[in-house]
Length: 361
Ligand code: COI
Image 1 (tube, rainbow, N blue to C red):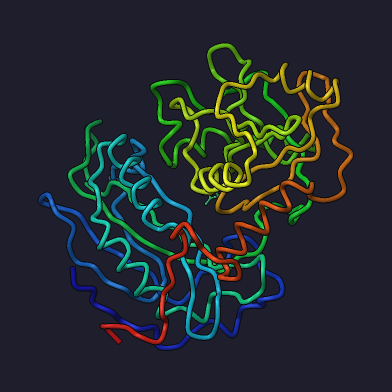
Image 2: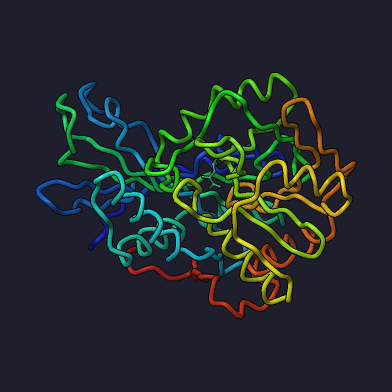
């Protein structure tokens, strides 16, 4: 699909303080956009980032057909930036689309849109380790219709934002609490899709957690309120003894791409990895018996985020950590090493983009 490009008359990059990057507050000069109607995607454009207009009857606002992805571009050198596993993000976007009866996108269209957008806005990719250009592809229903049914029209955008650490704690340990009252996902629901509504539904419990001094909620399963699932903003890992344990993908957990990378690397390091049900009681038992060594989260925005404290029904696991644990640090170094092109990428995860070439400009 040909992309028609309109460049911004003037770049806003001079307004950016690369030393103080908030997560997702400032957006680069351009955005990608295409529309879906009559059964096909069309009208692909890259244009200056800016407001969009829609009718109040736009279906996404009423019935929540909205999905997204979270990816990052990393600075390698003057000529090259890298995406991390973009084909996997594309596959997950299409999985989410199928769950919400939305149209799929061809891999070549998705990758080409990313590459062309990044070539145009490559100067927005921050250069420091730990910083990146966050990429937010988003698809939503645009038909103007109030019947509760599948929309026949959609819009797909890609916007980008230079970012540092996701959590206010930076890369220091975060504090999690379970919620007695709320759940994030239920089997058969949309928990494994990257659906916008999954996030909106978690804000009230997350706010309660924050009011009580915790960074995020550690979600338990909806049926028994017993098994650990994920954090909503990241997947979760436990190093118990010498075994790395993470909740399995049984329909309620987002299949994280960083999660998958952690599992692959840990197995290569000959660490036993178990993807299985882990109850909150098992976690507290491991803590009390002294075998719980580390807890960390994994996600595109969160990268590898150490967890220092877990609260559950008045009891607390306090790992007494000031910094990231040695296993999480090794994982952080290995994954970011590949992402920034500092460590050999033997898995083909890195997707270099030569920013000096473009078929369009
Ligand atoms: C990501 O890690 O990319 C996400 O989409 C999580 C979001 C809470 C920022």
